[in-house]
Image (cartoon, rainbow, N blue to C red; front, side, top):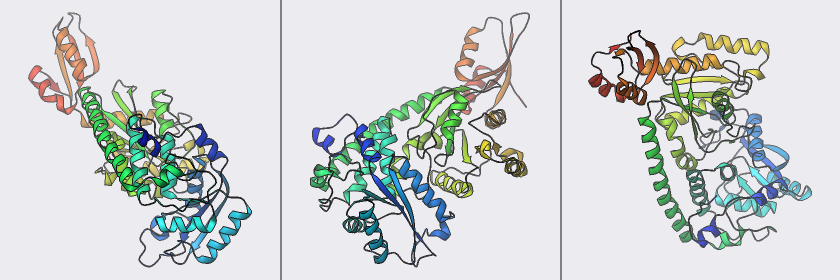
Length: 465
């Protein structure tokens, strides 16, 4: 996961996850433990009442996260908590019961679907005699597997090291497998255990400098894209909602699209011509997830900059999922954190995906629900897998773009190739009619930042009403 740049000591702290890592995961027998509050716990925010999800659905998601890194999940265990224990998170009796099962079933890793303090993690590892990771550690492991771009790998490493700084302890000597690197599955490794916080902080400082360079490069790329008069349309949504499948359907690209949490970790953009002639830049983004650790939201904010600056956002929802409403609420909350109004019908289109997984009655119900919304902000029911609803979706995208971008009619004199070239470079020609005398009648759509230059160059142009 580390970038190529860096000294040998950098590499000893963080090295790329390779095939051996996958082999370790595939051979690791794991328990997934969902410790959920039976009721609102005193002084504890974000409990079951506020989470909106059923405990079974939360546990299913945790199993999916474990499956995303190929762990061999032996059992998923739901634990109802009456109180949180400062030392072990779980009650003493439950810790002893799980320790017995871990030993009996030769479990090598316990995934806790919660946020553990370093002390709680260490105490549970001592009690279970095996590696323990919490939700944050598991998500970091997935991010490390999926990130491919230079920025993605640096962001993952920075988040990893920040997470590790408080977990540099020498209590993993009972683990048989130790290695370097900062994956969690095989233990932290001798090199990592011996690394002090100063070394990690130095590495973090270097990564932050590298990230500034990468961000400047991305800013230049975005600036060059802005000079191209194509609107940016970004796909956002809960992880595994089908964004990459929809991206592939619209662009005929081959972005990794699997029934897997966090299949896409790096932003991908493709130019696309819509049926009625409008050209757009379509961007796929990382999926959102509930209870995403704060440090990960901060670390991956840069990868969501395409979404922040997009002209149109497609909020892709899996309407076949039992928790689609809660997932949508999570996405809206993160969009608000990014300064985006999720209820802005001019900018945000809700795409109700996976219609192919709905029964006939449920499909009709969803279509009726969508029909009750005002036309300007009406959701579009689609199946990215089968192509159902794609025409309605592209029409909705074109309608949003047309609302926000001025359209003009003008006539070019015969042989005015220079003006025609300017229009092609700075706007979209929506319609063209060639006169018998060689004059061109044009319908042109412009990005707002080109309107002033257009008006100065073509004062005779008339706005389309």
